[in-house]
Image (cartoon, rainbow, N blue to C red; front, side, top):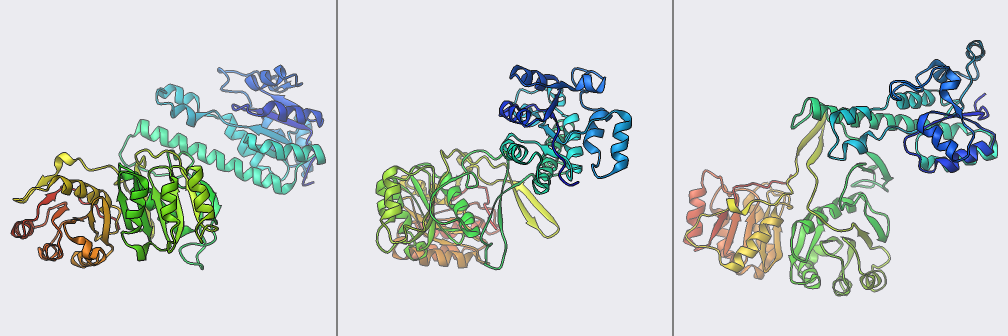
Length: 522
């Protein structure tokens, strides 16, 4: 017997969302309902006939409700195999009834500890004992038992019971998997909390990550690679995983990587700003008095590379900015922004030739980056480090040359320094008037990155500033920059040849700022 009729249901839940209608439906289908404590009172108040578990087991609830369902007459009725005569005989011998349907959700441990003012004793009381036991027992015996752990499951289950009088084996298998996944997630949350309270460390002895599959992607970085997107269940703030896609084709693996980088850059800039990303590096970025001006400056930073790029905005996209993006000769793959004004949405989905495919993602208001940690896989394990998103304290910056930056140069130096940390190292950024003119990324030699950035900037380099994510090992890069027309430089400092680098700047009357902080991005 693979699908026994559902005659009895055991219901014991903390979250009573949708429970009244679900239980009414079960009762109407002829299912006997057994329940405990607050759940029983809730069902009785809704006019549903309920059997009290304590009366059935002959053992009342005790220890302030800590012991309710931990009894052989409960677990025996869940764990008995309906195709085993000896199991059924044992039930009859001990007067145990079968429960074909078990409805359980757990004490709200995660919500309790997330409150902030929760005491340790309060948290411990929210560690559910009976609930996980019921869930595991029912999941283990899923060839015969249906385990319900989420109000979102009620509708499908009630449909089966109403039409068929039982559930399908396929459904019971899916529900069993959901139950075991939930108990695993619950145990991880408890372990993380106890570790923080009992053995607080900056890096815990065991790092557990709970991820939920959001969607299977068409493929990974290349068509022969399979890929999927997973979500952190407790991730907050504006991010791509929880974004609302307003238009366009489904997102690819590479789209998601580039959009994440575009969003990170836009988030890090204060004024109306736009970032243009190609192959996970910025090929354009700008801050201006209004978003349309910033959009044009960002796209014009490297127009050739910007073709087929993705864009990130730190303000809602308006019609004027949409008009800039829709100009002939431009092609944009995807755009992420806090929101899109209706007129901008109309323009981007009707005006340009590429309108049908452009992906528009709304993430909501941007706050500062809340990611505390970054996790990166290597063969055999993972690396964990603090996020490098927080702005550097400008009070630590030092002008190390005879010449001081002018006011306009200071603004460009701040912009370039905010941007260079998002470029793959060795990273060089050339900027002027709040716009990226050229970037050198991912080169094995810093002097090569300088050469590429200057070449990208071209004639626009005159009176521009240059930022380097790490120190200059030799003064050759300074000579290159000075010859091209760079008039101010910002870098971390810290080289054994800093004196030679400073001397080269002084020779060319170029002000240079040391920030004291390196920003490699590998």
